[in-house]
Length: 236
Image (cartoon, rainbow, N blue to C red):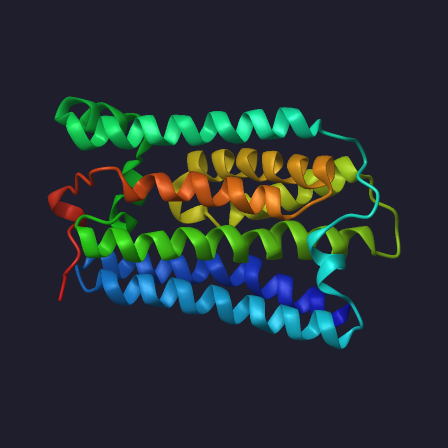
């Protein structure tokens, strides 16, 4: 538990510091977007690999991480299937609207994008493909750390924490590492973290929040990126 404590503290404290220096580079137009994307992907997978090495060395299994033996409550499988189908249809409709309607692209972009993350969003076809990899990386890596690892950590502390308390704490910590988005972004990502945690304890499977996380992040692949002059990043 000592290693896991230090590991999680490094992430919670390290991410805001890393983002702070990235924002400084962005303001001075010294950041290359391709390099930024690569560093995001590599860093997150390195952290997950480190955690998985610890996980298996401490005699845990893949199943221990990706499933909860006794879900605290049950979400109806038919409901989840219907929700998944509905989400898939909605995404297909949005993609068609974006593809064939300039007006729809602009309205959807204004509704779903945020000025605080404009620097991160892709602006051409190659960047969009790369960003899809970021969406996969965030969905898998962040859920393993902030839902899987944190649930295990807080659930095995010497003192008892209720499931609700674990959900609130882990969701707030998830929000804090998104401090670069401002306090509004922290609150919103904390809210999303709460939804992911609800799905984890409700279904007993980490794959459900992973899938939702990927869907949420992948929407930016299809949105136009209106970059302001002050946030232009140097490209290759």
